[in-house]
Length: 394
Image (cartoon, rainbow, N blue to C red; front, side, top):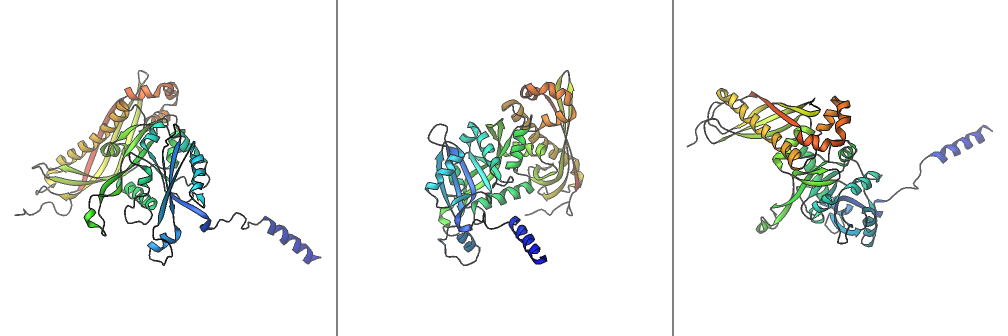
């Protein structure tokens, strides 16, 4: 009797455990590593391009034996009335089910972004396979060409762009736009989306075909696209993007060349842990903002040929002016040119003055565009490095 009861208990336990019912073999999947979105030929339609990995050839490129064709990826595209319709139409060209769990990048053409990206955000946030840390970018070039371009030292182009984003986040040169913070910006009552810019640049050099120097292309991460609601309204230059990063990233670091006090040469300063503080206020029922940036810096390259200890204050002033110019540039572009709060100033006002925000919320675009901004920058050079002077070179 005891054995029978044990048998029944084990049978019930086995019925609740997982099985291989939902198992998907890798050779049955089309694993997407990057996807491009563009406007289709039919008005209102979508052209979707997918970069699909060949697992055997990706493995072979890293040194393991492979029986594949040698190309680590292949690209395929289809059009549809919606994103999901375009994905279904990929079935005409692929023999496997499209699988999104390993996707690194979603890149949209400028025309698609200007038309509106609400459908993209809605579809990919509903997709249970897609990771929310997938990078999102806008390009003025062809998305299907961009996701097919080998760049960097990675085998898979999508993975190369993933590494490009991660490295530029460290150096403070690019906006780290992914699905998670894009959805957050869409849900915000004040902050507007800003998305990184990718473009193709003719700078590549092939060790197999060195005569093609300048004709090969590589992917460059530079600048950003500014949005109002779900529509792109314009580009930010690399300088304006650096100013933007002070608002949206904490403790930003970077490098800034400044003019030497005694000649036309340059000294290079590395600033670290730059912290931006925003102090909102309301006067005469209108918002005002005092913006203060503080940072420390080291001299990492001295082209001045003089002892820099005596010129510390001048160099600090040069660095402060350079960083302030970037902040002022992005403020002008956001306030006057695009009239869109990509700087999250509305969020800061709402947190400090919730009652005033409830009054300004309905006309925040106008209030933000006319708000008075006061910008202060304080820099401190911690060290003039071990060498304060150098020998003259004859």
